[in-house]
Image (cartoon, rainbow, N blue to C red; front, side, top):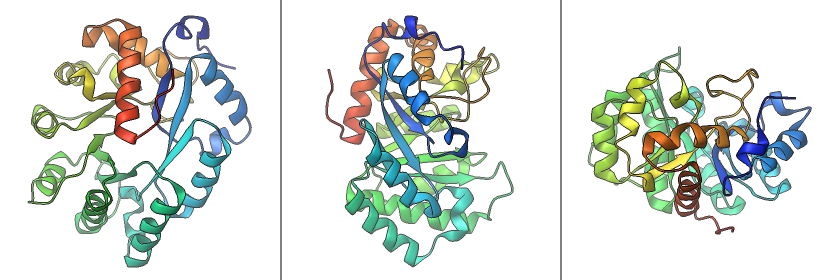
Length: 270
């Protein structure tokens, strides 16, 4: 089914995929097999990201159906036009009733033809404020929007715990992350040959502030035949990135799991 070498990866300690979209249609026919492969690679917990109000209910049901799976809820910048007071009230209610472990992914994205800045900024800043109010981490999506994001975050607002999903920012953004003790999500993008600049910034991150993610089914790591990403590739990423951080893959996997548990309030699993 894929080229994941589970024999090698299973030697690593238990790991968590902190950002995946297993509700995506690409997993409709074989999700159970995907989760089985993930477990064989010692990736036995998953944070399902509910980014679209129209899919929140499905995300909640899917997370409740599988042991080891938890979820976040939020409004992605591509969905920002849907944001209004009613959606905000529904989000707040579902965060409480469904046991969500965070808000997001939310942010700014001007890489594609999404809504104008004012629409995206309104949805993002209200979710930012909601995360601070509820003491929940906020998962940030940011693409071609670094300056605007930093302006909003530096606008005197109370800042909750932040996780920069699939970090791909500049030295200025990394300075902000270090100053605020924010978390950084490392995924397949960091393993690619053209990501030297990204890896240079990632070297600056304390290992205690790193979590691993796949963004499945997107952002498959380098040198993989399959174009659909899967949670088992958390092990691929841990093996590929540990040397950059300066520790063994086992140490890196263990520490990033501890970080994810602390960030999302998850129970420790031996």
